[in-house]
Amino acid sequence: MIKKLSRFALVGGLNTGIDIAVITLLSWLFPAHNLYQLLVYNTLSCTVAATNSFFCNKFWTFAEKTPITWKQTGKFAVVAFGGMILNNAVLSLFSTALPQLAYGSVWDTLGLKVAVAVTCMLLSFVAMSLLVFTLGKDRPVSIPQGQFSGRFNRGLSIILPAYNEEANIGKTLQEAIAYLSQVVTDYEIIVVNDGSKDRTYEFVKCIAHTFPRVKLINHQVNMGCGAALVTGFKAATKEFSFYMDSDGQFNIADIARLLPYTSDYDGVFGYRAHRQDTLVRKLNAWGWNRVVRFFFHIPIKDVDCAFKLFKTEYFRKVTLEAKGTMLLTELVFKFDRAGYSFTQVPVRHFPRTEGKSTGSRPGVILKAFTEMFACASRWSQEELTA
Image 1 (tube, rainbow, N blue to C red):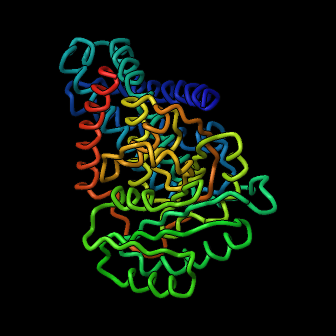
Image 2 (image 1 turned 180 degrees about the horizontal axis):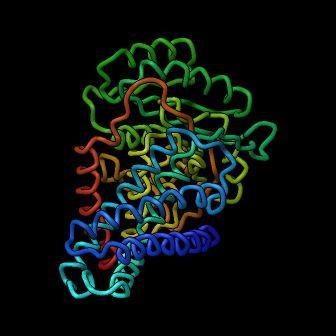
């Protein structure tokens, strides 16, 4: 990141030079007498600098070797257009506050432009990193399996919360049964049907009749992912409890990356190496992780990654209060606060091919933040009175 930021700063310096040179030349040849004319000059200079920025950042700052695509060019155009609007907005603000600089000499215009450029550069770096050259890249994911080999001879409970997953649950269960039968001596799979309105319950019930290791727990009404997980953890009977989403975005085989660490740690938490979600969900997750780390001081890379393993004894000692999305934060926060040790390993993440995700709905996000502030206040008070 430091290397990228340094290179971005150098490219930014070059772009600023180009930007300033163009607007200075235009101001010298055709002096601006009003804000409209100044904004036109600024837009032209920003366009020239943005074109240079795209090529320098793609092939040098972020060292991309992939060919230029219309998708990436479109994303860059959106970011550049947003930057241009921001640049013009800041310029308008400065021009209104300091009209003597805006419509003074060429040197006055130069000083004004430098101030505007410095103000916008860091915001541009964040936008380029998140939207164009990092989160926007589609690339194959290949993560080697862990060093685990042979059979895992300690008990393992797999918790799968499911809500309207009739299109995914059958395949997820088949893959889990096939893989776990090969590597785990003693396991159970607990599916918590959280009030599904489709045929999820019927599908799992049919599979459970054939495979006794599959246990089905049914919520009559939808209570949320958090409540479904709590139900599953309470029902777990093995030494370790592991949970995973039922939507097919994880591969159960990646548990081989977690199992080798169970002899040294009480918990092993997966994090998505290359998250395969929509841009909106990626941005939501990026912001949520930083908010969680700020409020709860948890050293966690991916708090909402549904690929985590805990010692089951933890769930016999802890009282879990959250019912929604916040439960995933509560799991890790109270685990860490109770003195349990954990490590983190990368796992694969796949695009969702069937069903609909509800995590990015405004109502879900609002509820998550409301619950987060309530929990932060309550847990902080508990620590003060402990």
